[in-house]
Length: 264
Image (cartoon, rainbow, N blue to C red; front, side, top):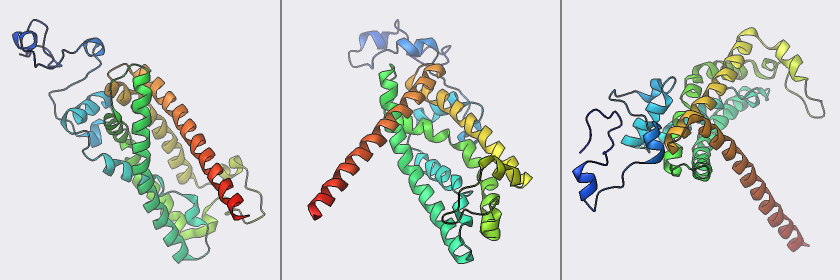
């Protein structure tokens, strides 16, 4: 039985079913009793509620279907994040700029899906080191929905991308660096940036910081502990990712060296 007054809906130790049935699931203990599982009777739209109710939204998605729309959200985030890529403006030729834009958009969507699998695996590992309970699937769900604010920035990124596409190399403050030409000082580039583009960039930085805050809450909910420990999970995930990248670079370097030596 479930106590109707319990907002989380967990069986109580005094319930006959939970105490007498040898096949019953284990009772929730530890973090669950500390309020780290957040459920709501309201059906939330995660595309909107993730902005202000990350823990309840993530719990709803985990309880219903942790795979639902995860790859779509990751692809949309990767897609939108590449709309404002400066490389679009590199070529003098419009057809090449169009091809570059579509290439970055497609590549961003693919990288977004690969990225969410890697992050889900590493954050699941990091969380369990810190005493969490979420697996890679649940962490993928939590982190994917944290990308919602970035996806909502897509139309503004598209404005920058179209500006790069139409204007070309002159769209970049000071022009795109040519071969042998030193890159422009970033502060000088910002001073030459159109005011509307500068405003979008500032807003993008604020949204990026808010996404990190959402990630702490989402990982905390998935692992059933506090958001502060979710921050620790995020930091440990970054360290693990650096280790994976370094190990991958080392293996590739060894293989390339062996291949070069074999050709001699």
